[in-house]
Length: 133
Ligand code: SF4
Ligand code: SF4
Image (cartoon, rainbow, N blue to C red; front, side):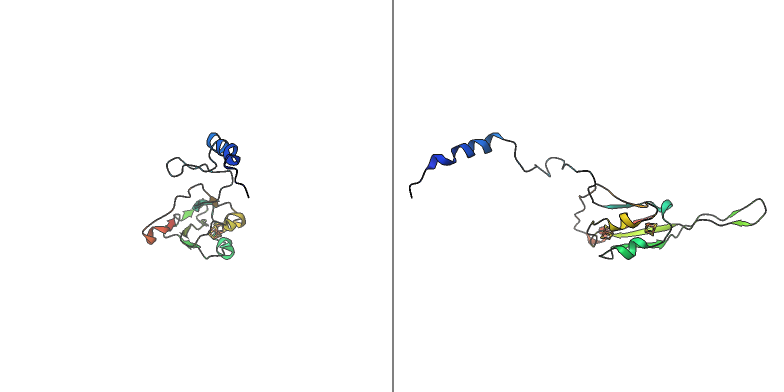
């Protein structure tokens, strides 16, 4: 079969003149799209300790524990104690999390949410265990 070296010329010119399909990350900041799922954030004041997030997590990456610091006891005008909402902490194991956001979807109090923080690589594995208070 006879070769036609110039056959590729139009394609080569096209590739040289159009924008690259790849990005220059990490030299340029990566574009993050809406609903991106990266590190999970936790808001302790919203959490009611139902542990639905723990039950639904496929990789056992999330743990909800009773916080060491609980709100101070309050007394009503009648002298009776006013029940206080318990405070919960969240332990997040980033080395197990697969960022599926099932915990976010199931949380009835919107105490969990996905962030855009995806640059989580670590040499020290202990730094991948986060304690949100
Ligand atoms: S599902 Fe939400 S409210 Fe329930 S324990 Fe988890 S974070 Fe707290
Ligand atoms: S994002 Fe998925 S894997 Fe990570 S803690 Fe939530 S449910 Fe578990």
